[in-house]
Image (cartoon, rainbow, N blue to C red; front, side):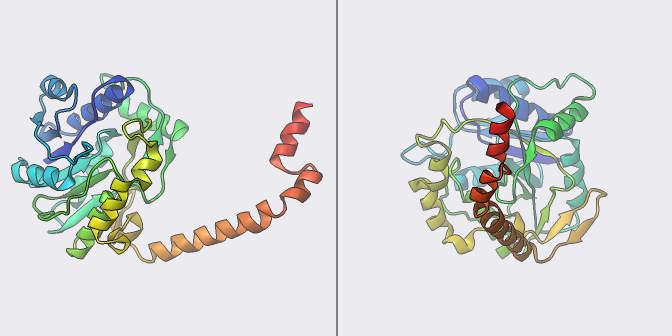
Length: 301
């Protein structure tokens, strides 16, 4: 059906919990799903043995220990048991809607990339996969406590094996490699399908302690900037705003147009409203007791 591959962080503490949650959700997608973990981080071999996963411990790394994307993608595509493969970050929960979305699209195009937005959600404990309604309960919890992240964070990539035959030496765990994958697929003439309306991909919130500078280090650190340079510059970075198609909630694949200009227009109008009607009127609203802070101060008296 599908080969899923990923590369985990050490299975320690909270990261251990959320990675096990993610992996167990993948193994429940279909009886013929192959799951492959790359890397020799603490606990990886044991988890692969426990859940009957394929383990590829040898991974190329740079001097800081960050893993090279090209080596992992080459290995995965060369050894995958299935003709369709999926790279997914090791903190993402996937459910039956993901399986159905992939099945609805595979076979209709020779070159495709399936991507989608994620739901950031606070999850601290092990998911109850033994419960028959675990997916319904999880979806309800995500709608209540989570939020849908914008079109710039992409955590899963489904594509035909062999489509990414040549990749620059980008590193995982730093930003921008995901945006290059979207650009590369479009440059190959692939159909880029946004699964967001039909798929709830759950990102389990975590800290960024694996980078000395935290999240900003993964976004603006030297290795992230090097990813941009190796990608060929910002013109070779694309997002969900560059999708060519969308999978609707009722299973139809529709062409999408003008996503990027519409998004930019909405952002401009929102920013203008904040600048003109929120920031500039704050002193007056504060004097009149109409600002949020002023209302809170009055309520506390």
